[in-house]
Image 1: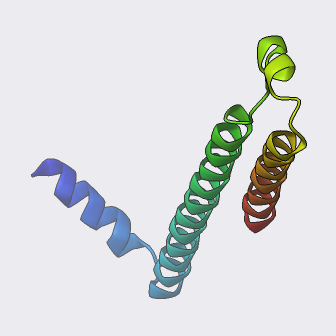
Image 2: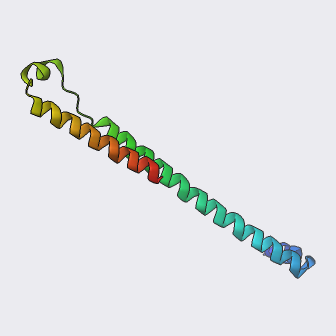
Length: 95
C-alpha cells in the first residue's frame, strides 16, 4: 500500500509531457527488445538447421569405395551432398 502511494507521488510530481515521453521511451525499448529476441531466435534456428544439415553429409568409407566403383553410386553421393549444401546456403541466407 505504501509502495503504491510512493509510486503515485512520483507520478503526480512529474508533468504529463514528461510522463508521456517516458512512456513512449519504455514502449520503444520494449519493442526493440522483442525485435532483437526474434532476430536472435531466427539466427539460432538457422545455425541449428545448418549444423544439422552439415552433419548428415554422406562420406563413403574405404570399404564402400572398394565395393562402389560404380559411377552411378558416386554420382548419387555427390548430388546428395550438393543438395545439402544448397539447402544450408539457402537457410543461412534467409537468416
